[in-house]
Length: 386
Image 1 (cartoon, rainbow, N blue to C red):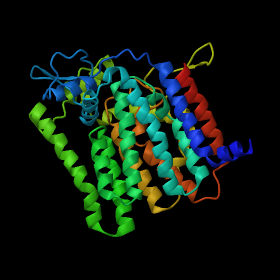
Image 2: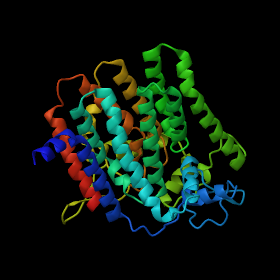
Image 3: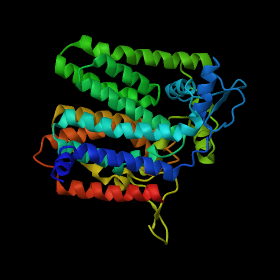
Image 4: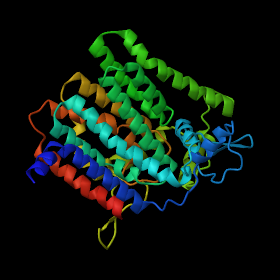
């Protein structure tokens, strides 16, 4: 019994993270029916294996772009490339698709802990922040859904975290490859290179090492614009404006103001910071309609990220986060379908890096932070169950 107690004490962090991973698996089994639903990433993957960029007779046209009589996926290509590799293996890719989403979500839990340990050097800070990310943010809900959008987000977070881990291991070229692939999954992850280049130059004072990181990022950008040219005849045309969108409000947005416009800022700002839950008359008395809720309702502890210490690395992180959020505020879609604010996943890895740096510079985490994390866990559990 004493040996068991010692073993648990020695490996308590690993045991806790494994428990969280098990919670993710149970949540995925609860939320998904594994009925081999089709989506544009799966269809694009099969098209790649046929040597085509367009999708012939797509089963699901939602979010595909129709251009010159042909169907294309305007979304970045790496998720489909990954799935194309899976199709070469003797597995049922469509059946396992929700599992891939959850698998990357679980990997993100462990990757974040590894990253935070490199930054904070404090196991308690690293563990608390990892648990807050895993069970107190939209990452949990997004990791147990079945949909192409969620696959892109868990995969891009995986690649973004990998890039940051490589950064702190001084493997700058590998960091650049990870950011390049993240950009080819969710474009806004390319802005992580701002922070990464800052850290590289701050630690080495060597511009050549900054360029080493940027080389694969630039290659990814060139791949993206070349695909634009091959599909839509212009390096500047991504095809998003030809997308077949289901919701009437989103269709009107695109027709009236395009994909990006300052006109969207009030609507998105309200979603990110103020949009409340829907209230119902039975337990748990809260509901959501898919259009999102304020990040300070679903993850109120994130408010601590708004007040960084006067250290250059924290300020650079905050500026990087604000830049990504500013672009999201100008986007025609606020992240539907979602619980919380799904697009926050584009900047959450940087946010938790900021929190780790902040708590590393004080003696202990404030008690209020623990209470806010507990509240976030309860709210996100409601989001999963109901």
